[in-house]
Every structure is written in C-alpha cells, then in structure tokens.
Length: 164
Image (cartoon, rainbow, N blue to C red):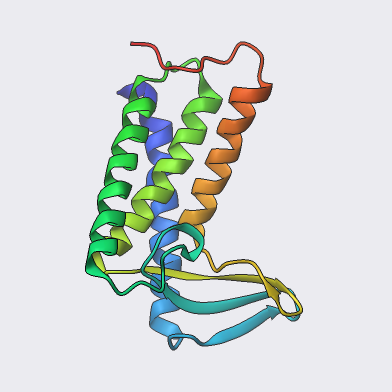
C-alpha cells in the first residue's frame, strides 16, 4: 500500500479540487448563468448534468436512467480501482493514468450521490459552436484515458494487463 501513497495523494488532491470548484460554482452562480472568462472562447457556465460524461443522457428525468448510470459508474470505478491496485509499481505511467481516472470517477460519483446530479461549468466555444459542458473530474477522466491509450498503443513493452 505504501507504493500507492503518492497516487492516493494525487487522487485526494484532484477530488478536493474538483469538489471545491463545483462548490464555488454552485455557491456563487445561478443555475444556467454564464460568465465570460475569455470572450468568444471560454465561459464559466453553471449547468446540472443528470447524465454521463459530457452531458450524455442528461435530459432524461427517468429515475431508472439515474440508477443505471450510478450503478454503471460504481462498477466502472470498482474495475479501475482493481486494476490500479494490481498494476505493478514499476508501471508509473499506468498508475498515474488510473489515478486520474479514479479521481474523476470519485469526484463525479460524489456529486451524483450527494446532489443527484453532477455540476458542470467549463464551457469552451468558438462563436456558436460549444464543446459539451464539463468539469475538473471529467478532465481527469479524459486525460487519464488518453494516457492509457498512449500506453496501450504507443509505449513499447507496456504491460496490457496487471500482474497478480
């Protein structure tokens, strides 16, 4: 467990930043309001996402969709946690990528369980073309997934499965 301490610290730091940023947005902005940070490119816009990453299924008010998304998220979180714990300590890039994914998954799961929705607020756009709203947790998941893709497809000698 000692070999995982730096990664656990990173996870705690990122979950803390995610929850702090969401709390600040929730506490200082009205729902559906927006503030330009870089006019024409980046806004802080408070939305509630009841769906999955980048707002998929967010318009559904169906309780079953919420329950299924929460259950799927918990299952995915458990699988990533298992691989994180089983990954050899020598695979630092693998551990880092899984730590990012865990931080993002934990951050969004906290919202889903405590609020019933995920707070999204990062809004990038060019004119009227908007990237889906997202948050710090989504960023962690995306960056972690990109690092995993790099490991699996481009890093020579990378272990594709964790050791026992």
